[in-house]
Amino acid sequence: MQSSIEELGLTVGFSSYAEIKNANSAIIALSTKVEEIDEHISKFRSENSRNMRLLYERQLDIVDVVIDQTHMIIEHQKQSNAELIKAIRDEKNHSESPIQRNSEPELQLGGKGDLADKRFKALRDLKNFFNSHEDIFPRWRDAYNENAARKIELTEKFIEHTGKWLTKDNTVFQKWKQGENQILWIHGPNGIGKSFLAHASYQVLQQQLEKEHIYSAYFYFKEDLPFLQSTQNAFACAALQVAETCLRYAQQVALGVKKDKAKSLDVETWRRLFLSPFGDGVSAIDDDLYLVFDGLDEAHEDERKVFVQFLTDLVKEKPRVHVLVTSRTEEGHPLEKLDPLIINTTIETVSGDIRTVIVDRLNTLPHLKRFSRLTKQEIRRKLQGKADGKFS
Image (cartoon, rainbow, N blue to C red; front, side, top):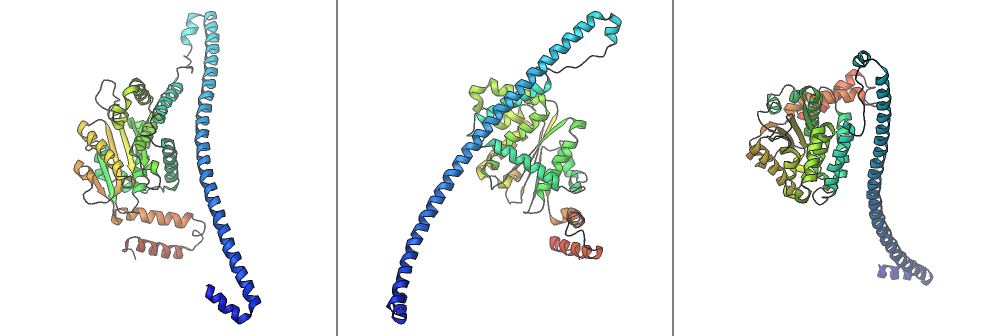
C-alpha cells in the first residue's frame, strides 16, 4: 500500500502525496480508536449481560417471596372468614329446633387446611428441594417455564384430526396405553412431525385424566438450551406437573423430601419422584402415570445414559408408570435393549396429517385463503409432491 501511495505521489505532485499520506495516518489512527471502542462495547455488553442475569434471578426470588406472602394473607383472611361464618352458624344452630338443624345442608368451608393450601405447601416444599440442589437441577425454573411455553405453542399450532392415526387407530399405541409394555418409542427422521405426535398423545392422555383416573406430564429436550438438555430437569418438570393435579402425590413426595433431607441425594431422582409413589408400597398411589418425553436425541450423551437407567429400573420394578419417548432413528440405539414397543414414523404414516395441515393452512393463512379453489388445488398438489414425492 505504501509503494502505491508513493507512486501516486509522483504522479499528482508532492501536495497531493502529503494529503494522501496524512489521510492514511488518520485512517490508521481511526482504526485503532474503533478497535478500542469495540473492546469497550464488548466489555460493556458482557458486564451488562451478567448484571441483567443477576437482576433477573433476584427478581425471581422476590416474586417467590411476594407469592408466599400474598398466599399467607389470603389464607389468613379465609381462616378469619371461616371462623366468622362458623360463629354465625353456631349461633344460628342454638336458636333453631333439632328438626331445622337436621334438614339444613352442610356448608363446606375453606380454611387453613383446605386442599388449595395443602397443595401450595407441598409444591413449595418440592420447589425448595429443587432450589437446594441446583447442581443436580440446573436452572430448573427456566426449564419449567420454557416447557410450559412449548406446550402452549404446540396447542395453538395443533390442527384437529391430525395424529388420529396414532392415538386412535394404532394398535401399538393402544397396547402401550393399556399397559402391555411400559415403554413406547416413536422414532423417525428430522422434521417428520414427532413432536406433534408426542403432543397429540399427551393431549389424549389429558382428556382421559378425569374419566380414567390417570396422571400425565410432558417434557421436551432441546439441544440449543443446556437446561432443556438435563434429564434431571425433565424429571423435576414432570413431577411438578403431576403434583399440580394430584394432591396425594404432591404431599407424599414433599414429605419424603423433607423426611430424608440429610440423605436426599442417596436416592435416585426418578425413584423418589416416580417409581416409589406409583410402586407397590403401602402408601403407593393406585392410579397410573403416563410420562411423555419428546426429543431424547437432543439431550447430551451423558444425560441420555441417565434416562436409559431410569427406564431400565422402570422395566425391572414395573411400577404403574408408562413412558412415551421420541427420538431420531439411530442404529444400535440403547433403547432397543429394553425391548420397547416401537412405532417407526415415515412419510407414509404421516401422509394424511400432511394433507390436513396443507388444507388448513390454505384456508386460514390470510395471503393464501384468498386464492381460487383451482389455485389452492395446484398449491396443495405441489406441496404434497415435495413432501413425499408420490402425490401428483
